[in-house]
Image (cartoon, rainbow, N blue to C red):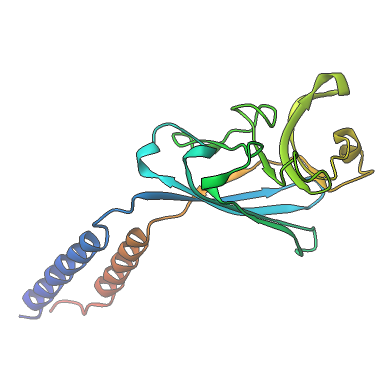
Length: 204
């Protein structure tokens, strides 16, 4: 009898969790959200978040297709250096960001003003002593490979590399998807079911 009772309980539990997981994933969110992360050679870092409409999945998302974008920069000690929350409806022409949704990669192999690079932070056109975060390459300056620079006041990139000025360089700007709330709740529900099945009494 206990064996039959346990089977019934397990079946009911599976059905309940399956229904819950289905319900909490419908309707599906219409925005894809990603977290940004970067650490430079000297220990400066950045954390950010951006979102865009799901309809752009399968393509390269550009700055004019974003729903939101924000990024914060930190010193090697973890102190906040500068925060930026952009008004995506009124972006500066200097703002440049390109994200490949297929490979989930921020494009950063080209110069700051190209479709394969990025230009974040302050607007070069209005704040020449601000905080700039961008990709840059210039063979004439001996910078044959594109790198990321966290700069202040437009200091020469070669100076940043030598450690003689400004903040930091190098590293990679990575993006990690943030699961939809429904997916997270579904995983919790499945985890709860797993715990229940492990704890159910042995059949006699």
